[in-house]
Length: 307
Image (cartoon, rainbow, N blue to C red; front, side):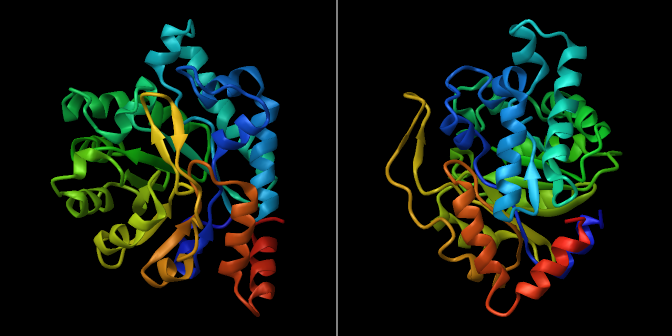
């Protein structure tokens, strides 16, 4: 596989979409505290198959099913640390099998709030110090990096303090990473989003910063806050809104990627979907980013990464 840093310097890459959304479509109940991590444990073949669906749709980067995997929540479910390490490694292996040399694998590193499963990734209200958060993130980052992904997808980071913690946790990690903030988090209501992006961009090994798990209409403001000369990563939800109290989605899906070309013009180099986006959405995005007359280039890149 070519270096992903060189690839995004050349052109935008298409990310995958909502892994959990597609697992639910296969009949899995994600209402429990482990979310899609429970499917990784009970039905790993379905996780692999959903990854493969996104690759077939044109995703050039797929994210692993490790977003909710943590030592504390899985410990409460009866898994010791060695078992958690094994599951983190399995998430990378399944994605690699599904990619079959046709896509880069990004190991998903979710926020502390994802492991709590209480919606706090939309508030950042953790009651933890930066140092405690850094230590909490470091062990999982080390385990995922050791499993051999192409990069780390550090996602839905919910507050300036958690961004600082991630920057500390990445020190000495020899795998490129993107850091994507929770643009819908109330922790940024009083400002500080652009400063948090700058902190993220200065972290060791970071190749892109941006936002995910937010309405598409927030993306232009996110791109406006990305430091000059830094690649941006954006992957919004379908347009629906998550209600943490009822653990359900409200509203209607919109055209998640209607402004994708404008995002590219504003510096986005990793573009995909988050919750409620499907392989059909990603296929449409891939076709749009290829553009009229660019199919030969798209095919050439497909061949270049092993397709």
